[in-house]
View 1 (cartoon, rainbow, N blue to C red):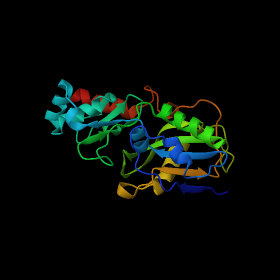
View 2 (view 1 turned 120 degrees about the vertical axis):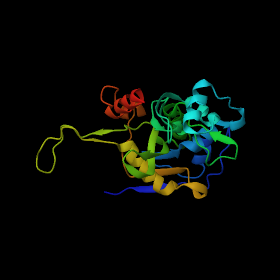
View 3 (view 1 turned 180 degrees about the vertical axis):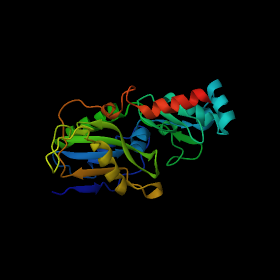
Length: 254
């Protein structure tokens, strides 16, 4: 068994209103059941999620957090505008976004964008993935899956990796529960984070900084799923998320 990870070359700098599906389609010949991995930065740019820092007016909460953390209140306000809960204020803001993804700074980015501007993540990454996928399927006539990714840190390790934040026609988790291991024992808790594993694989080719490639195609792995899916299937329920519970307890003590 083998698969390919193919960097889609010649993707230009993306701007607000650009037809991202057409740009991708023009630069690769798709095959049935390809998995198209797209960096959230280019999705956000095409959707116009770009804001001037000087146009942001911080509210009371942003000003209070800025006083405690020493950060720019305008940037904090930009994070709060895309957050439904702040779990950590400093040395960085760890938040749960409006879309349900828990990450640093709600994915708001000052890199890969002109000075003085902020790049917000897509408001609804699942919807963004669906729009990309539907249009790419129309253009190519192929069955395609799409994963929109961002780079995330890990709580207990140094370094960032690619993580899925939106999906189309792929199940984000493969459940091995009920299967047997090499010794015939029944697996009881194993759930494989397929979407994140694919995002991490693509990130090896995407890279970071000025030489980044924002689109990668994974070929040879059949994870196509012809029904509605959502990245929310990956998120732990409030009842089971003991890390969030612990962070909330710390906030109350402070």
